[in-house]
Structure formats: structure tokens, C-alpha cells
Amino acid sequence: MVRQVKQKPMNWIEKLYIFEAFRGLYVTLKHALRGVFRYETLPTVPYPEQKPEINHAYRAKHRLMLRPDGSPRCVACQMCATACPAKCIYIEASTSADGRIEKSIQRFDIDHLVCVFCGLCVEACPVDAIRMDTRETSYVHRDRQSFITSMEELMDWDPKDYPEDDFQSQVAPGGKRNKEALDSWGLKVN
Ligand code: SF4
Ligand code: SF4
Image (cartoon, helix red, strand yellow):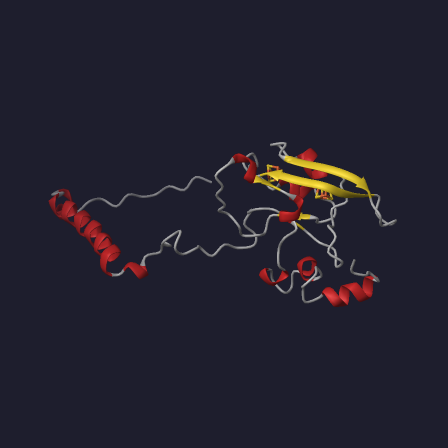
């Protein structure tokens, strides 16, 4: 829908321009002085000394979700690697020792220098095994190889950093619902 904005006609003071020019300078000066004397009231964050508050819904660095026994939820179906437009997920699968699961991962690397953070891998996963809710948005390395995040790194997260109502996070080892999940699912810790 097109919205028409009616322009207010200028009065005679505005038509002189000189007063409007001074009004513009006043606004500029007001903001400049606020940055010097009332810095804390600015709506900006002094990054990197202070990190901005990031929501879990923000597409950040990946993590691999865990079962209550600490094993990865991933069943090596390759759906994420197939959906990935940047082709930066590398998976190697092997036959799972758990008879209920066909395959498990031996290698799961993501090249975060190539990843475009589109989130398609998360959308494609049929078992909620990969998420991008770590809120980790800034990571710096000196060489390209270090940007390849290994399976072990992707599985290295703490349930305490995730909301208590996030069921999948809380059933992982160390989570508030881990014991309950181990008991109800009849799983044993290796
Ligand atoms: S976020 Fe996108 S580019 Fe990155 S690994 Fe997932 S699918 Fe690939
Ligand atoms: S993370 Fe999900 S989509 Fe990717 S291989 Fe594992 S189970 Fe399949």
C-alpha cells in the first residue's frame, strides 16, 4: 500500500534557512557533547570491552546437540551437508554401536571461514542435532585451519548457558533434566 506523506509548508522563519542551519548545528553539538559528558546514556556498546546482549535466536556459531549419555544426537544422515549452500560441512559416518541407531558420526567439521550463517543446516536436520544458538558471534584466529571447528568443539557446550525450558539442552550431561532423562530413557553413561 502506498502511503502519501503530506509535507508541511515552511513558515517564514524556516524560509530564512539561517535559523534552521543553527538548529542543525545545535542538534549535532548536543549529540557530540553527550558522547563526551554522558557517555553511559548513549544507545551504543563500547565493544569489545563490553559485549552486546545477544538473543539465543540469533544465528551464531553452531553446536551439536547431545543425548543424555553425552553422545551426539546426530545420526549422520548428511541432510545438513546436502542443504548447505557453502558446502562447508564435512561428515564421516560409521556404523553405530547402539542397535537402535543405524549410523553415528566419526567426524563432523564445519569450516567457519566458508560458512555464510544461513541456518539451512539447522532447518534441514530431522532430529534437532545441530543448532546455531550459542550466541558466539566473534571468533578470531591467526590461521585458516583454526576456523575449521571440529566435532569435539561443536559438542563442547554447557547446559548452564541455555534456558531452563530448553529441553534438549537440559537433558544433556550437566543439565537440570539429565538424571530424569537418563532414568526415563534407560540410558547409561559410558
Ligand atoms: S549456516 Fe548455512 S553455510 Fe553455514 S554450515 Fe549451515 S547451511 Fe552451511
Ligand atoms: S546434524 Fe542433523 S542433518 Fe546433519 S548429519 Fe546430523 S542428523 Fe543429519
